[in-house]
Structure formats: structure tokens, C-alpha cells
Length: 480
Image (cartoon, rainbow, N blue to C red; front, side, top):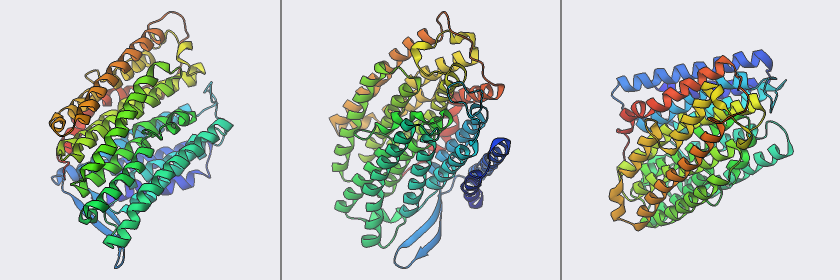
């Protein structure tokens, strides 16, 4: 079983490097073979994990007397759940990318150098999976940095001055988080624990636990674009849309949440002072997103602020976990899984505007109902992100609110829950206005996209409804 998971991230890491040398149809075929093979191996691993009764498997692969565990593998319900959504969503985004990255794209026609985009994306997928299955803090740091590098590569792909600036901003901000958080955690592991295994950090005293928690929280918040370091994410929307979908739906942003969840899981209990810092930043993030929704003109920037808010909700769940509720840990991962497919659908639908209409300006897009797959995908994606059933985000938000017992511990939990509901209401209001103006309006032209792009969007729509039922058996096994 372990070999299947190792191969599922090793193949994209190697294949991604080879793709830098390919272009055109050869790049298309090699990319698809690489990602499909990685997906098959991962799904086979998930099947064996289920069949074995969902055990926790921890293997140390490289160790030393002074550093303890340097490199290892951790297969448990949390890593399997998150790895499953990353590889399946990543596969669908890359299939869509095959047709999106073409000369027919009206806003960003691609005539050559497609292999470079594929290379960064496949490396992104491999690094994300390797990060998920890591059992040492040094591994988390290494793959955290590779993800940041891949984000730089895709954000700057088009080569414009704006794209290059956004790419460097994303790289610098996330690296700042790594230096503050993960380098500190590695340093403490070396000097105080003589062990870099994430399991060892439960042995720290409360003062050092607080230092590690605050540091890792900063690293996670930079990755997830939380206040005050959030502006890099809307700016990174200059990336090709399949990259935006992966960045928001299944990679960078969610991996910040996953990183902090891992430390909360294995350092529990966390000193309560960490909760107050975390809660203050989450509340500021929620307020900013609520204020920014109505101001957005670009479809992708609207979705970017939605991502910042949705990851903020995952952190609300983790805040309850910091207060000792195991259900908070489960709710954060449940929301992560539910959010991935619907956010991917939203971005890929926005990508059809760029591809067929040459614009992402929502005021210029009319009559999408003439193209039913596109029109209904945009409608359902926005409603799903607002938390309307039967889409998974509705159940994810219910899962977060089910940890209401935490309200007894702090009034800040009440504030975060109220803002969660207000965020949903404001985003729904903005969504209904945009749906009316963009989908069920007169004028506009038909959005012509390829059958492959349509098929991917339909599959994502179905997965957005099935997500809670796929994730639930794994989520209930997540715990301390």
C-alpha cells in the first residue's frame, strides 16, 4: 500500500521535470499519461487503505542519531482524504488544460511553450501530494517550498510585467511564512527534540509549543492568503485558469489549512494564547472578504476572495480544535474536501469566459443561458460556494457550526460563527446579482468550448454534490 502512495507523488515529480523539454502534442500526451498514472496509483492506494480498515501507517525512511526522523511516510485518514481530493481534482484540471491552453483561447492564445506550463503544474501536483504524506517537519518545509516555486512558475507563465510581479509577490510572501514558521519549527526540532518527526513535537513544553504554533500558523496563513498577507492571491489570478483552479481548489490555499491541522493534531493540547492570535486574524480576514465581494468586477478576483473566506472558515473549525474539540479537526478537513470540486468548477467556468469571450469582466458577459453547460455551471458554482444545498459546502459549513460547544470557551467563537453566516449571506446576494446579469439576461454571444472542457465541468458538478458522501467515511476517523 505504502509503495502506491509513494509512486503517486514520485511519478509527477519526475515527469514534471521531463515536461520542461517537451511541447505541442508530445507535451499533451506525456502530461496526461503522467497524471493519469499517478491518479490510478493513488486510487489503488486508497482502495487498499479502505480494505485494510483505515489503519495509521507511519514509516521512517531516513533517520539519524542527531536529527531523528528526517524523511518518512504518514498514511492515515487525514492524509488519504486530502490526497484523494488533490489528485482527482488535479487530474480533471489538467484534462481541461489540454484544450484550454491552445491557439483558440481568445484572451490568452497559446502557440508554443505549453510544456513549461504542464511541467510546473505536474510538479505542483507531485509536491502537494508529497507534502500531504510527509511525516517529518523537514519534509513539510521542503515540499512547502517546492509548491511555492511551482506557484511562481504558473503565476508568471504568460510573461507580462503584471504576471511576473504577481509571481514574485506570491513567492516572497509564502517564503516569508516558511522562514517565520517552518524554519523555526525545524530549528526547535533539531535543538530541543533532536527529532524532526511531527510526532515528537507533542513533547515540547508549553512555551515552545506556543512558539511553534504561532510560527506554523503564520506559515499556514501566508499559504492560505489570510489577513494581513492576503493580497498575493487575488493578484495571482493572472495565472492560466487551470492553475488558478488548482491553486484555490486543491493546492496552495488548502495546504496551509492542512499544515496547521497536522500540528494541532500532533501537538495537542495547544496553549490557549495561540487561539486568541488565531481568532483575531480570522475575524479580520472574514470582515475584509465580506466587504470586498460587492466590489469585484473580474470573475476570477471574485472567486479569489471567496477562496480566502472559505479557507478562513476552515481555520474557524481549526480554532475550535485548538480549544480541544476533535470535531473541529474533522470539520476543517471536511470543508476542505467539499470546497475543492465546487471551487474548481467555478474557476473552470470562468476559464470558459476567457477562452470563448476573451474577457473575465462580469459586466461584459451576458446571456450565458444560451450555452447551458456554461450557464448552469456558473449558476450552480456560485450558489454552491454560498452554501446552498445540495452542494458539499453546505454540509461543510454545517460541520463547522456543529462545534458550537466551543462558544462556551470564548466569545470570539460566537463572532466567527456570526461572520460565517454573514459571509454566506453576502456572497449569496452578490452571486444572485451576477447570475441574473450574466446568465439570465438578454444579449451576449454563445460560449463555444470543446466537448472535453464541457465533460470536465459536468464531472466536477457531480463531484461537488457527491463530495460529502465520499469524504465522510474518512473524516469520522480523523482525530488526535
